[in-house]
Length: 161
Image 1 (cartoon, rainbow, N blue to C red):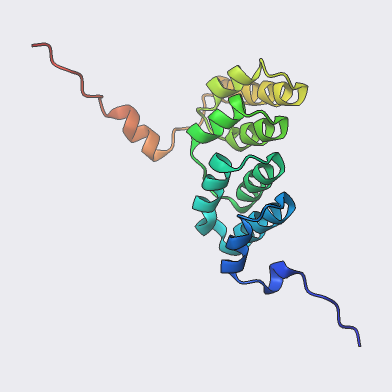
Image 2: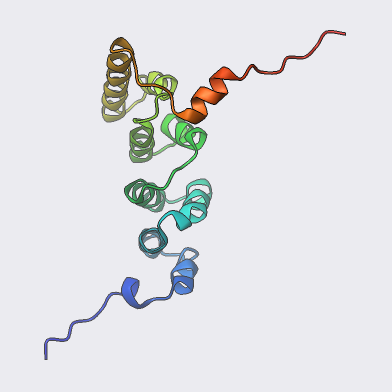
């Protein structure tokens, strides 16, 4: 009759998928975070952040970060920098550095990643630094409006007493 089984990701409710994030099986947790990000889009950012901060399994963290970047979820640059420079997983360090690649302030993180134990992470760091140097030599892109405002506003300084 041409009927084929439908994977749970298509028929499971969002609540059921969220429940799978606590399953002891890392494969189920990995699939659940991927499906939730695809389903909720940017609305899944808290789930992704929680997974990145709390999940111990590398494959689940990698899936969360990969799905988030594919879906265009903005993750805090500080969190990405910490992952890029300090995660035990080469895959996580690479993905986090890759997610930071378009950030004009990624230079210090890329500089730190030049000392990474992984040749892949080091190569990506070199590419990011080269791209940033080319932009700077070409006159650079103007800072985003929020960055321009931050740069123009003087920081309050403590007054001596």
